[in-house]
Length: 493
Image (cartoon, rainbow, N blue to C red):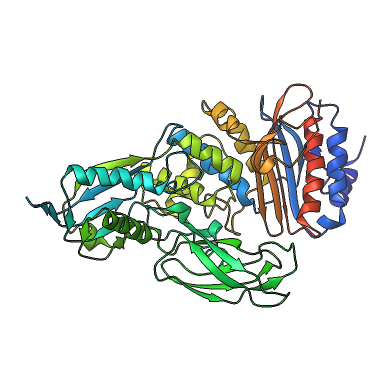
């Protein structure tokens, strides 16, 4: 029998021996993979952890550094989407309203303004759905205007962005992210996923300046300060777009690859609500409706303008179902969609639609269901903030709790499938985990993460979380090492 001193010696010398559950006797394959990673030179200076639980009873099957707070990247999205299923339901639809103030006279003149009132819908103008093209939305709005006999507007088209609080990006996002498409933020009134496409023409040799050729859609008054040069052939998109919300000035740095004419890069629209109003104003003018004033936008802070006039509803536009939106989030990791859902959860809970109120609601909601949220930092819903923190045990515990919810099967069915779909399509092909493991990946500079569910060889549904921060080597090499660990989980008996 070991003495107390011997036990203390073992804990001091071997503090990170993997914890393996008692209800599985054949974890050798998983234990070996964890041991390999624990001595991997690419993880020598990294912070990383793994946690695997049995969804039938919540017991820990394997754990390593599982209480260490780590940057989860896009795996954090699952906290948002699961809460949305719980509080909004899978059939929830966002509503965008067309309304007006003033009087419509007998000559068909509206002596007042038209308002496009956002309700948080991130899909207006999106090409990802069959019926969300902006032409469809504006055509429906135009028909409502025509029904009222309006042929002239003695006022403005106003984009009402007040559904969420005024700051449409998280204050902890990095300066190098917010001008790019993945940092476009969540606005009460969105259009084209709040992103534009910029085309580049590389120089005739490496190191030469790369010019911009076109922008789609065309955004009025946007100004580009271009410092982009030509990189090596095949080097990909290394352009960083710097620019803050509501500012039309954008600075472009980095490289585009040699030999790729019309190379496309995506950036964030400076003021989506204003742009939506400008587009609708242009649309109506093409329908021979005259408008006396320029399009404008109003936000939640513009209380005088918001309360200045009584409005009457003309019509409304409904988004695709929440389930179909979440499916795309799980497959393609769309930040803009996720944070729009996060803020809508806040609004539907009679809160202000801010990041602070929304993230607090999410964590408190699951805490009441037994979730240990101690030490979790949730700065957004999409995982873009580098200040986000969660442990792998907390993530797997969360997935275990979700597996007990009524909406679980819908949640599970919309996750990406290993070897088959979304961001998981390229992993675990030709293995027992293909078409079996379902989950969410997370990736940002220096971070790789995977979490989700897999059915093991004994037909038990397991939930897992793996996160690595600050590893050495390439992200693609780390991905291959993580794949071996995920396969080992599927091979458990």
